[in-house]
Amino acid sequence: GAGVSQSPSNKVTEKGKDVELRCDPISGHTALYWYRQRLGQGLEFLIYFQGNSAPDKSGLPSDRFSAERTGESVSTLTIQRTQQEDSAVYLCASSSYLSGYGYTFGSGTRLTVV
Amino acid sequence: DAKTTQPTSMDCAEGRAANLPCNHSTISGNEYVYWYRQIHSQGPQYIIHGLKNNETNEMASLIITEDRKSSTLILPHATLRDTAVYYCIVSDSGTYKYIFGTGTRLKVLA
Image (tube, one colour):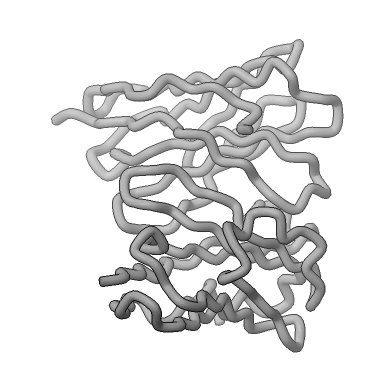
């Protein structure tokens, strides 16, 4: 597609449930990034993919968080046993070093844990 | 930690130029300066980037000092739609991740 697509756009879940957040990057973009943005705060880096590999997972806040990417395309961020502090907007971005234009971000998934 | 420091907030009159400063005193030779903005409830949007030379595109101009320790983003004729948080980021051309600081909240006043 023309841009980075994230789904769902909004998700309300009960504490303790698992959630999956999906990101469809721009076709041909080899790099994919996940960030988290809590209300009124800046963006926190979570994880980066180059192709299907994740050389840097240092931003994942706990072992409840995991992510995968397949086919050098779609990525899924999974949060297990959600907690209220996981409530945030989860943003995905993709880039191609050939583009010279940095990242293209999606509109994010707003996760609310109740 | 973010490699940049920016003022927390700024106001600008509609139609006037908005000049947003950024300090990046620890920048190294192969690191680029990127600017993004985030309008409420949206993902950040790329504006411009540069290495050494000043850059201009349809959205803005980027002025980088000769020692590269600071830069200024210029929106030549600010409109109400330019109200947003503006992030200045320093990133190696091959680096995989940006570390976002708190940015500058620009408010364009009618």
